[in-house]
Length: 249
Image 1 (cartoon, rainbow, N blue to C red):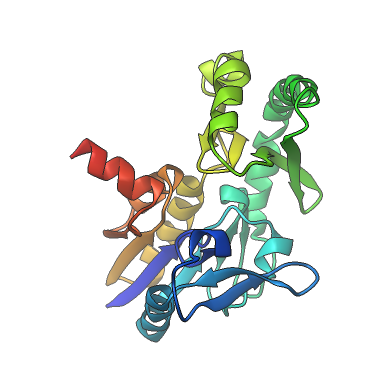
Image 2 (image 1 turned 45 degrees about the vertical axis):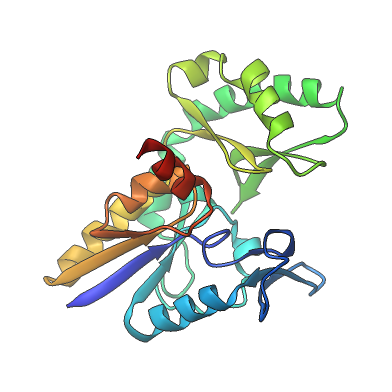
């Protein structure tokens, strides 16, 4: 039986020091461009990585772009899903051409919608210097937008979401969608999502391995759709997704 795990990274396998100040035995897992350690794994997360590395084929499924992924201090042997599903890299870290061709054919009709919404957001954010909006570009393509706030909390982002994003026509009709988790508010074209990329890879792995068992691991509500494609799911405690499930129960 061949086992694969589709693994979210940030806040699943490691997190910033602010989110783990009381944990002993931290291990650095990512670094900033200048080499300063930035994200850390708790003792439990270190054990999880060691356990997975022994028997699983590990496929990272992350919102990180290629530059940020390169600063993760772990070794991955399988394909990689980047930019929330916009980009797939093969085992040799070359772009999956078939997946990219499909993205490039479909993306243009969403760019105008994203830029229209983004222009309004930037104007609003200029009135409050605490907001930090930026468009995410990777492999010479703009994929989606992200907004953070200097106070590091969700409250001002929720206010911006309610006042300037939720009622935009492209959000209402589903051509664009949003995701909010902590100090991270993203606006994305509907074609960019982790579940579509994982489904694409799953079909490949199922052809390669007649006996296959799959796991999905993630912390965020936006991870749930790709995790639901897998046979089993792993969810860290005290995360957005675990809280949502506990509330529903």
